[in-house]
Image (cartoon, rainbow, N blue to C red; front, top):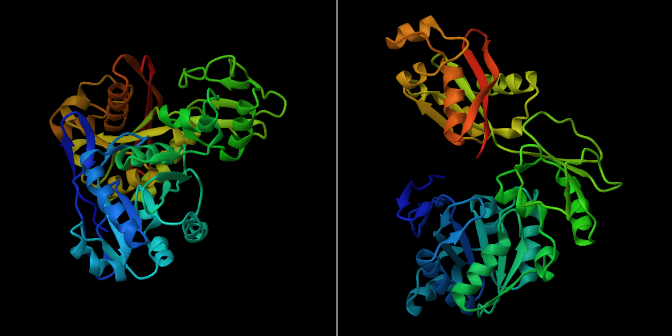
Length: 403
């Protein structure tokens, strides 16, 4: 599956170029971060043909950032023959809805199903993995009057997508999550965490915390780095260090925290791993070296924000694949910029290779990445250069202070 390149839009985050892609040889060209609209009836197809251009003109702002404008329109094959006669956008045909959804469910940023909620539920049930990764689903009636947030309302952005679709079609959003449905209700912790860029490690503890907030019980919170400043008293007891009875303690840090029965852990992505490597090093070895470095210094892998290296290594397949496996971007810096960074373990060999004074690729890259992420803070090396198999060097830094 080939993804479309991103382009910059003035005043907006990066978004994919809108495109309606044809199906060829059983594959689908999916826009990066795009939506899928499934019209299950002829009236629903007309609604879908209104929605797709509306999204192109008024993109949906996804909760993780970025404007989602692309939406591919799907319809049963029998309806696609009539689509051209109706004068609307030509949909992509499918034979059976459940089979098409099973194939494409996790290939899209979100789904809008124009049809009965029961049909949607039956098709989706076997496909669900976890709320942290399932894309949001909105169900629309054929006339576009009601947009029901069916799946991944908070973390995936289903509630905001339902509201956006309803605005575009002049309909009404139907939101059933308790924190949204009750006027003046408590905030949804997963929504707060998503907005703050936090990564939830203990999803099984989240329902109990959500229930406590809804019932008016204060939730103990340990947030020494102030990663979640919007979580205020009296709903949250800031500075707590233990669970409140059967209400788990919510603890936020980049340090490694062992799982505990009464603990809901969240990791802020504030750690930056600098990596140097020889040509041809495989991704598995790099991932193993990064994970071992983090664990050896008591750092949480889920708090990793990036891999960073020297610009000349940015094209290494192993490094690129390692970043993909770790779910972080790969950053690259020119050698002179790395050489200007004061580090504890400069390498004479690295300097000689680039015709520069001695410097450290991994330590310099880690510190630069951390400093760039928080320009008003102070970059600090948490894990100095460690050499693995004589082929890989890894260092980890964080930037403390103001975001």
